[in-house]
Length: 295
View 1: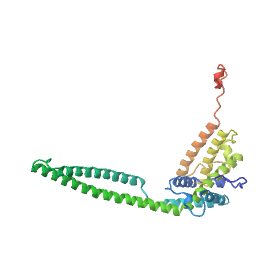
View 2 (view 1 turned 180 degrees about the horizontal axis):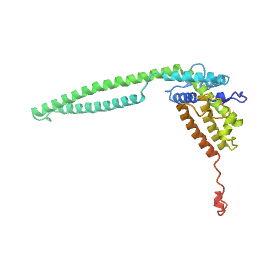
View 3 (view 1 turned 180 degrees about the vertical axis):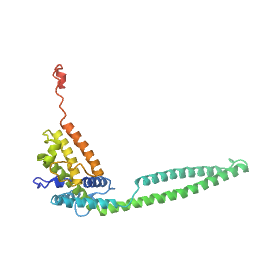
């Protein structure tokens, strides 16, 4: 699924999505994980690998805006899928299982009573025979009520299964669009990663003012990137163009001030972690082989 070597570098700050666009990508990828039995192998005209490679090849040359529009359309399509209540379906199957079990018990009781009724000389007087006959009729009446409930439960289960089949057929009909949407979403995430790499390689002044220069240590550099991403997302969401102030004018509306305070907390925590003093090796303590973790 990786782009082949020599792919053109088209990343920029524009390749970093806004918060709402990032949420759409995450929601789409999460929703596509739960497709019922759908596979690209079910599509005519090529294998799973061939279809994926073709979509990936096409997505490499697509503008970022086109990829985002594809993700949005795919998410709208996914939201319009036929409704299926998996919990209700499972509950209806459990209910049917209970009724079938109760039906088997009722049939067994009736069979035992009828066998007892047929045995000569075992029932005694007429009063006992009538009691057995009444018990059989009562059990049969209960069984008929069980049969009615069982048939109703079977109809409910059949309706759930019909909806499941309709959903499966609908997914197969739109599987190519879902496959394209997934590849386009993954391409957007890859472009965002490359854009963050470019930002870390040549950070704008407002990021340096807030976070300092990007560290060289990989773990610290990744931490710096995440802090930078929170700032860039805020600037994109509120269309901030100020080249010096990372979060723009502080005198804004209540909603933006609230979001700004959240970003400030993230940035402050990032600075603290980046600039926390490293704990030196305790030279005042006796040096021994076990300190090095050797046997």
